[in-house]
Image 1 (tube, rainbow, N blue to C red):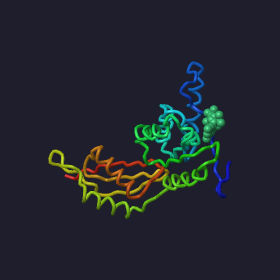
Image 2: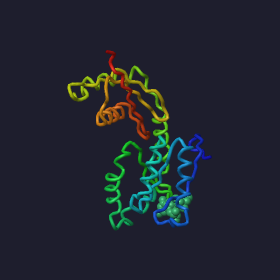
Image 3: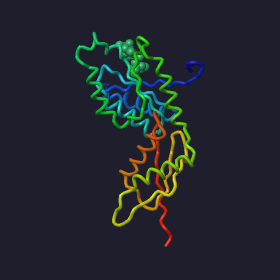
Image 4: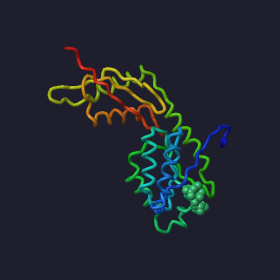
Length: 224
Ligand SMILES: Nc1nc2c(ncn2[C@@H]2O[C@H](COP(=O)(O)OP(=O)(O)OP(=O)(O)O)[C@@H](O)[C@H]2O)c(=O)[nH]1
Ligand SMILES: [Mg+2]
């Protein structure tokens, strides 16, 4: 239990999962199982990434586990002291930016905190990012607001016509939180691309920084 600014948090520390660990001992397997269990118990996952090494498959695996478990996420880039100009002779800082752009483009919604556990640099920024993510995870948008927004959106960007048919969203509502879940009632099948578009627009409008969101569609066929 750790108190930060009068707010109490329970942290679960997990064993690091290393690329070079001895697979034959099974240690890596059990570490991953325990990490998975910890993720399921948590509300928020702080994924600590070591900036002295390339973003690894393991890092991406942990992020994916957290997304699948539908938890709030903050990406913590640790050991930033090593990226100070006088130490960063090999241009690690620039490479890191490229790696982030290339490998982490599927979690652009997660806040990122650059810090150094060693020197304490920026450690005060962690709580703000955690609170942002948790607030998003908890957020509830009133149905009237969601509906009005979706109404305006589909008026401006209607679903493409397919085979003479054009599915319409008749009603939309946030049906759950932790994380936010939206249900769209449509007159026909909504294409994957269009769903993604709606999801992106919901994020733009309501700012779900730090949380996955779920968008489901229910198709209600017209009565003959
Ligand atoms: N330069 C630098 N080194 C750090 C920083 N944070 C941790 N380290 C070093 O990294 C090494 C690993 O630190 P740990 O705190 O044991 O890391 P961990 O992720 O808990 O490791 P496991 O529990 O074994 O998975 C140690 O040698 C630390 O001194 C940092 O901000 N800067
Ligand atoms: Mg440790």
